Length: 67
Image 1 (cartoon, rainbow, N blue to C red):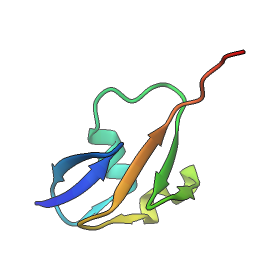
Image 2: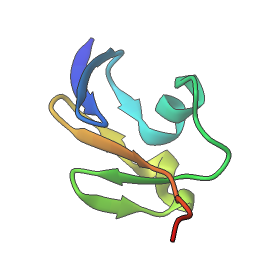
Image 3: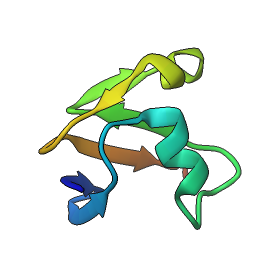
Image 4: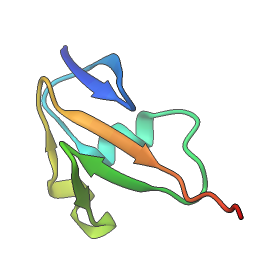
């Protein structure tokens, strides 16, 4: 197991892991979202190649409407 941060909160996940597998296992994902790993946007087509290692910070970003 490794520890990562997800939206600022520590989470334990199995190692090694890639972003696609992590997101498939993550519950509560909204329908539309964007992902940043260590403050770098990751395009959806790169999720399978994006490795997740101990200490990484993953942000799940959701678009919001407002005025």
